[in-house]
Amino acid sequence: MEIPVIRMDQLHGEKRSETLSLLHNACAQWGFFWLENHGVNEGLMNKMKDLVNKHYEQDMEKNFYSSEKANILDYEKASSNVDWECSFMYRHQPKSNSHDIPELLRATVFEYAEEVIKLAEQLAAVMSENLGLDKDYIQKAFSKPSVGIKVAKYPRCSHPELAMGLREHTDAGGIILLFQDELVPGLEFLKDGKWIAIPPTEGNRIFVNLGDQIEVMTNGIYKSICHQVLPNKNGSRLSIATFYNPGADAIIYPAPKLTYPSQYRFQDYLNFYSTTKFSDKVSRFQTTKAILK
Image (cartoon, rainbow, N blue to C red; front, top):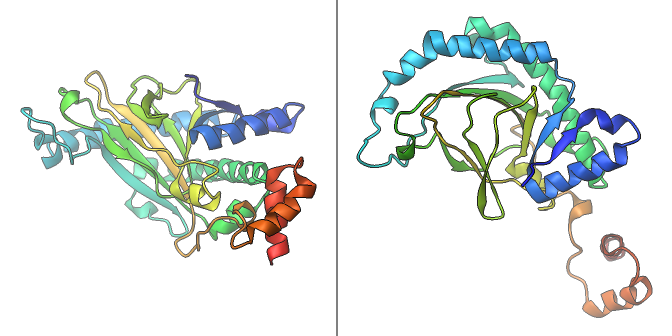
């Protein structure tokens, strides 16, 4: 089962229509996909990865293995409520917590966030376009988007069968852009009732998944998908996840253009249907809603 791959540069050429269609299908049928040729500076991505790994080796790793979390794992039974991870959260906007971020990473994580926000905005625009909405619909609906980066390492685990790196969940927010390990696997997404392993990153690809608010705003057309992380006995996995979320005060509701008409008399619909039977049903629903106003 091939995970969809979207090449962002093809949105600006003769393959634009084909690429828009691929993206729409990825959002509607999968809820996750790979991005290539996305425009985020490759040197910056490599620097971010190297600095996070350096900070982990200098500080996070030792602290993790000496923590209560690492020692709570009972090797006679699985620990179902402990996530085998160490992480910190960088809040970029609207209010930064850069003073809480290791000095080693402070400047680079800010620069990285700024670039990924631009990519998230591009995605929001083409997703809106694919849904027949104004290109700025999602960005405006997010109302001063909140952006944060979860920097995580999933440490090597000698008994991975007895723990979870991160328990299964969907993401609460909007668009999640993940830069992950190029060697160590572990991420899995649920697809048609089966867990699909997401392979390690190749060539600075970015992995995207959609959060709960996108599913609500698109009236279920686009999907927020359950996922989890498995620990690994052979190595530690890197995860740098940027969350492009609605602002805290954003009021979330399905885009009116994407909702079904409501409270109409069936005979009235049949009367309209008799003259529009061979037209697109979505257009018919929209016209029915307009008549009912």
